[in-house]
Length: 199
Length: 199
Image 1 (cartoon, rainbow over the protein chains, first blue to last red):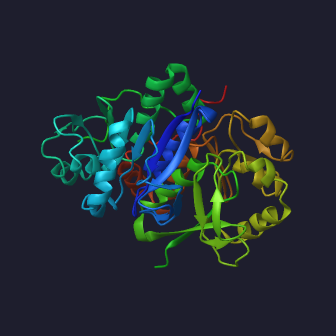
Image 2 (cartoon, rainbow over the protein chains, first blue to last red):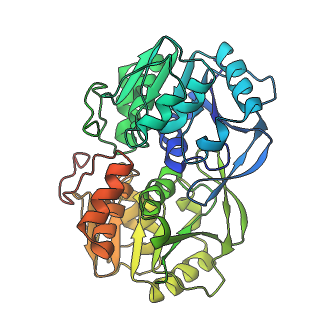
């Protein structure tokens, strides 16, 4: 069986854990998944925190994924104005089964119009900025993550690990999600409505 | 004031989240910390999960750090036999205030003899392999993390985020740790003795 194809989007100023938290948990599925790091162009991308990661391929390539992972980070402030990136996110979102955002990554999906008339959530500390990027989105202020159709949007940073496990459960079954969490010794916050960071 | 210097060690087959979980939380301290990615040689390093990160500097450089972060991952199986790497870890450990391992990263510190006659912990699924690397270590089977002198060893993968917050509390105070956790929307498992993964 062909592995579940994950495309993780990088852009300058991406948040480290928004990307590598979910990828760690997906990778616990071993050869049932395949991970490709994507960016405008293949090569080095510097994170918001400083460490650099490498994009394997360009978002312009026509490869098809089962899931697109869109992180947040301070770099979203510039990225929302990058029309080429936004167009590429729209294009890739058409083909995939899951579009996932972590933290302020929702600002990119919102700016693309992909969340219009849908429920979605995002980081709580910069909730007011993100929501201006999608005035027609039905933003949910109290949620660890929100599912609407193929769009799985999560709250700040570490909520990305919780939504990743929810997607693993959805795509591979309950046991697979529990197994991924156990291998990472992660205490899964599995109630999407429980949000201790919404004040 | 000079920022708190963190050196994060990469080797082929390092575990993604062991590195980027703790770094995310340390980076929430903004300009109070400085992060340098280290490896045998500067440049690309492939993780256990596939994605590649970039080492900024060589472990052979004489730069001094306040903290050395040693991740685990399947690559530790080869790395424990790498005498040059082990010697470099010993050398860097002398100068630092904190030596931190995540998951099977403890195998490298154990192999280096750095944990001899000290208490330490590691990943629970491969506990038996790691402990053979340090027969004189007083291994603690039930612990989220263990502190003995400057050595802060943590359990599997996500336990690295909990020990990172404990170190932030130790070095910068309680408020700083709570602030890092809140910004990452992370539910801190702050009791080092509570270990739901020790069976």
